[in-house]
Structure formats: structure tokens, C-alpha cells
Image (cartoon, rainbow, N blue to C red; front, side, top):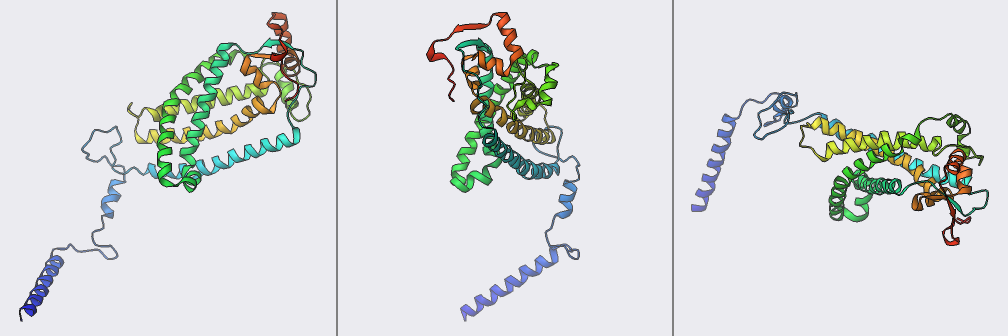
Amino acid sequence: MCAHLIVTLRAVLLAAVLGLGWIAAPAVAAGEQPGNNADVYRAVRDGTAQSITFTAPADRMLIQSEGQTWRQWRNGPITQIGGWVLAGVFVALVLFRLIRGKIKLEGPPTGRLIQRFTTAERMTHWTVALSFTLLALTGLTLLFGKHVVIPLIGYSAFSWLAALAKNVHNFVGPLFFVATLVMAAMFARDNVWQAIDALWIRKAGGLLSGEHVPSWRFNFGEKTWFWIGVVCLGLLVGITGLVLDFPGYGQIRQDMQLAHILHASGALVFMALSLGHIYIGSIGMEGALESMKTGYVDETWAKEHHEYWYREAKNAGTAAPAAPTAARPSAAH
């Protein structure tokens, strides 16, 4: 009897609660779910300034629609097209190596050296090169991590790797920017247009034919890399990187999103172009790496690749005495 009474009381109380809830509930429009705040969020997204409880820059919107646009660009064209561009350049370099082979000296090294780069120039170059390499590796990790790295090492390990990559990227970025400014000022004079550059363009530098095309200190290909790669793209990614690195100087969210799109896009193009420069300057051309390691090149190398500069250097007396056998560039590379 007691148990039956308890069950009855429970049923009465449940009915009372449901009845009160039905009476208190507002009328719901046809087709709209109860408790739906769609109208509220539509008002929030219309760009009207909202009342917030913390200090913020000029954009006082609770929901910023441009964020979705940035996300679509970041995960769409930037990641997808950028990945294919890097892969395409790498494949092109492999094919070039298979077809053209290593660019070797035609004549034997003389053992007489000419200074091509000063110590200051080499230190500046290596500072830019090493900081660029760190930024490229960490940037690619952050951009392609969820597509490439997470499937290999999992989410937990990637979270640590991503945090490390982000901090390295943030701290190395300003160093790269300053070194790029120094490098641009240091090499600008030798990278201006000269009449012989037109011949280099017509003959494509002799890269496929193997023909010697004379030039001054830098040929047109090197000048193109300097102005488009080092100066334009280097300063673009450097300046936008500073905007992202130091967000407390009045940047609103739209500024940060635009800076990131320009930063990521410019960096991917920069990396794609750098692959050709790195290849030619390391394993692609005999004697090229030695010039940046020691500052000197053999007279044969100078004459075959930069004949006008070679003549100028000889007349200026920058050629060094014959080097000891151990220091001479080897003809077999």
C-alpha cells in the first residue's frame, strides 16, 4: 500500500512539472527548434559592436565571419596548392639532374684562387641560410603537420613537436629579418641590370646546352633570385612574420589573418624558388659550394662561369697565390 502511494505521488509530481514547463515555455515558431538562438547569433555576426568585459582592439565583434574565410584559405589553396608546388619543383630538379647531370668544370683547376666572397659576406649569407632552413622546417611542420606528421607519430607527440616548432619559428624569425636586410644592402650593388644579362636570358644561361655565357659577379639567374627571392619574398615574409610575432601593437584580427595568408603564401613561393638556388649552390655545380665555404674559387671556375668578373678581379689583383695541394678544389666531384 505504501509503495503504491509513493508511485502515485511521483506520477503526480512529474505531471505537475511538465505542466508548468509547458505553461512557462514561449511560443515556438513553426519549423524552429525550442531553445534555438539563431536570431541572436545572426545579430552577433552582422558586424555590430558588442558589449564585452575585457580590453580589446578596434574589432569588438563576438563572432568574426572573416575568420572562416581565413580558415578556408589556410586549409584550402595555401596548403593544397603550396604542397603541390613544392613537390613539383623537387621533381623538376630531379629530372634536371638526370638530364643535365652535374655542371662540371671543362678545364682542370689551376690551383690559383680568386676571392669571391669576404668573411662578412659569407657570415651574412650563412646566417640567412641557416635561419631560413629552421623557419622552413618549422613552418612546414605547422602547416602540413595534421596531414603528414600526425599519421606518423600521433596527436600527443605532435602536440609537443608543434609547440617546439612554434617557439623556434617565433624566435628565429626576427633574426632572419635583420640578416635579410643586411644581405640586401650588402649585395644590391652587384645585382643591378647589366647589358650582358640580355645574352644570359637568350641562352638560358647555358644550363641545358652547357655553353659558357659570360657575366659579371652575378649572372641574371642569380640576380633574379636575389631581387625576387631574397629582397621581395624575404622582406614580405619577414615583415608579416613580425606582425604575427608581436600582436600587441594595435593589430586587429583581420590584420593578423591577412598577414598570415601573405606570410604563408610568400613563404611557400620562397621555399620553392630556394630549392633551385640550394641545388645549384651545393651539389648541382662543381666548385659553387667552396666559394661560400672558403670565400675563394679557382680561376678556372671564375673564368667559365663569370668571365667578366674574372677579368675584373685579375686586374684588381684579388687573385691569391697558388694554393697548397690540400686546399685546391678537386676536379672530381
